[in-house]
Length: 484
Ligand code: 5AD
Ligand code: SF4
Image 1: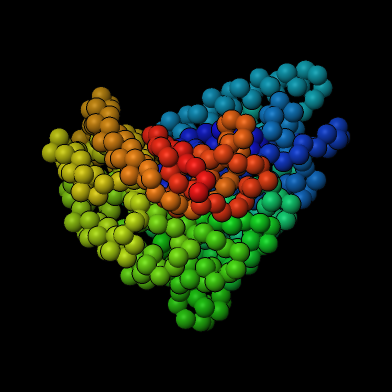
Image 2 (image 1 turned 120 degrees about the vertical axis):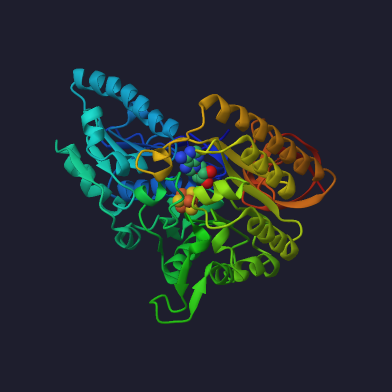
């Protein structure tokens, strides 16, 4: 897979269509070979919001004199932008720190220096504990502090142990520098734009409300400005990001004095920008799926027919224990209304197996809702108790092997549905956005309206263009197409 090697996305987390999704549209930037320039390597774990944050930190550092490198071995500064959503994700970070410790020691022996920072949700959740467990780390910075990243790095390079985990989200967006045109161009034709951050929902399994803080929406004017800049740099497809993106709210005049706006209204505004060819948004919560947003799927041609709407479980008892604020029937009703508005819409979801107290019968209800919805793609996980969340305190934890067996059954069903969805595309004529070169010479990879990768023959000069193709065959995760 082609990707910007300096931004590595390790794991597929959800709302977060996967590692592939998180790194799409990237092209390597030219390496700077000046020997005296300090080099930064950012490694990104987890969701697309982290990808977006990593890009902003890179922008701040490169505008402050750093250059990016795609090799950790060459870096003077390594930032690990981390994910804390499941235990495995957090543990990966510590094993990476172990590897970097050896690199740092080898560098020190030769009189060199390497500064190591941990940012993101592990930094926020663990704080000082990171220094205790991994003294090799020089900097710990939570997700709401990145506007100060350059200053924090300078202090860490001066030998200080720097820790910053305050919640200052408004400042983060107001003060982070805008990417330069060149930086945006280098990231490709499909770009992410964070419109909302944090979460007030407090699902009982989830750390996000603790690591990302309360829900905050960026002002509409700031978002539109950023979208205009992206388009000016050649971006054709914008994916609006937020932990709870459909909880976004704003006002017409951007100062809170105009008419109230919800995500559907924002999508209308963005669709008016000439040069924006496609719009997407992720991740949504069922209870924020308002009529305006559902209607937007009917009324905005540029809004792609794809909805990532996690349900997590199919049993009302478990949904209640998860604090999801909706029943299975209410979720199905939303799906029905969305499909009425946009009949060809692809539905994607997130699922958890083995939440505390989940019986065989509860799990069967999850299988049932999957059958009822018929998903085009999905992300599913074994329940991972996260310290500090209510779920972790519950007594009736489900044994690992039961979680695993249920996950295997669920993934088999979801896999069949995804393959069937892909197979249904065969013979259809569709428009794809050509995003990057393919694995083989003369091949390009484009994106279908339903977020599938589409392999087609083509020339590199065509990247960034829309192309009409006919789907010839399908695999589990991609389509093969011919020009028409
Ligand atoms: N265990 C397993 N999966 C989780 N998710 C969030 N927290 C946990 C957890 N503790 C999953 C949910 C969510 C996605 C981002 O990650 O499905 O939608
Ligand atoms: Fe976590 Fe639930 Fe908020 Fe999603 S809605 S970020 S799962 S607490």
